Length: 471
Picture 1 (cartoon, rainbow, N blue to C red):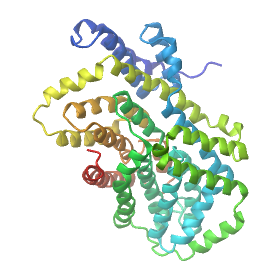
Picture 2: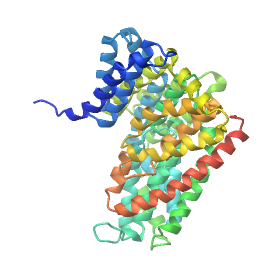
Picture 3: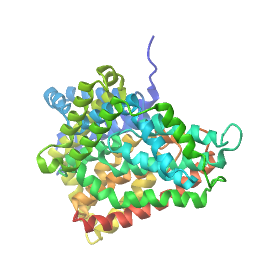
């Protein structure tokens, strides 16, 4: 049986790609023919990621095949791209995340934090925040964290307190906890380089323009705006979207019951906890002792495989990891070649001349805000970052913004802009469909929290990076 293909999805990419190719005689004199042709294919590829005639990995394979046939790449260049450090680091972290599910450590952490902080609804919100922070260090999938580990616990806890969408009692406690968890998931995804697969795309695109972002640099730059967001967002939501249940004295007993049901920590949990602690330590100090972040993730997965916490079957079944490794390797190859051909240098130089006399900080602020609100047009994190990040970064550099600062700010904004629509990403579609938050409330609350996040990350974030010497 033939697989379904959205043939109409090919129309816009083909029109853009062929149209730009045919405009080669009118290209700027400073851009080579090879660079212009590759740019045409790159734009068509990004458009196809948005219109989705096929899944993204299929689009990437077709695109790179066409590029080789057009002699824009050699086969050797393409196969070499699959050795991308960034792609393998995120893939390994996704394999490592299976250890949290297999061992049960993720659930135990959630129950433990609920036991400690769950005397009130606000305390429960912070308890789930703590779990998110811990898990996002090494699980680069917010779907795996929220949908796979936290939501089932949150849903069970809410229902145990008489808060259920089916009974019309969701506003008792479930609505607040569910929406707060969604926003916290966004914040923790921005807090760590390994918090979201899309972060690696931004880092790779920055590297293509000669800007290196390490795990530690990302974390230090995100630390203050991230922690401030984690503190303020639950409070703001508590005021504008209050639960009717304020005190939750029974939650401690509820958590105790579940912990008792799980029994003492298993050997698998202990190994997972120790491996996770080791990986986190090495990510922090690795740059000082000559161990890069990718090697750290390989070490962690090797330990988990050797001890039996995860298996090759787990790795093979983690389809998103292999999917990500394929399309990430290809999508990063194109901007890297465009940089080599001088395209982005021309782009930033030209725009820099147009923006002469305009304060770079103003330009960067406008770019970040535009980047944030343009996500209303994108149903995918990856397509948004791939489409806008290279150009926006070039504009910021052309305006005179410090290169590392611009790369980091736009990287952060590729995550916090998820506080927009119910279709902004997979977890948004999932959470908005649980029944805990109405569609009207989802739009309204996202809009308000979006403003809060913009203020924190733009104002406090830029100021903090100055304090730590990023610029």
